[in-house]
Image (cartoon, rainbow, N blue to C red; front, side, top):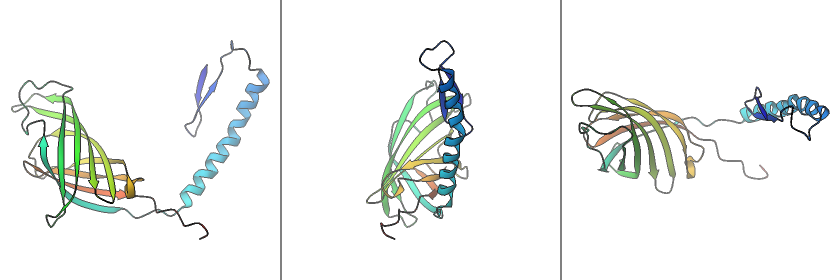
Length: 196
């Protein structure tokens, strides 16, 4: 079966020439149907883009590692592909606890230096009670502490009030246990109430 990408990035499958059950007429019909469906997709995209977008919310908090399975300075000979986890407590700028979270990471590269540095791919979940979760991911050189060095993160989704979360942000390992997190979070506005 041959497969072809349309301009709107949808995959269409066409049976190969030796496949019985599909005549040339139906293949032609399938090809002629592509522009019509592409028009519908384009019209749907135009309507979706006309919806008002929410302004980004900037969330700034400190993520404090309370438990972690990897030391700040990795031991010599740490194997590539090793994984680690960290449990977090989240604090606002006044030091009040606002949530918790976790990090799950994998070592994807080892830089041969003294001490060795590791490159990690990490997925973090920041959980805010009664509000929801924000999920992020990134890849960076894990050096703790490393004040003044910010690593970009992508917001990949969330739950609750953050179920449509997207955007980006930064993390900065300011000292041995604390990471400063700044997220520019976009969420879709809530749907309009029926009849409005």
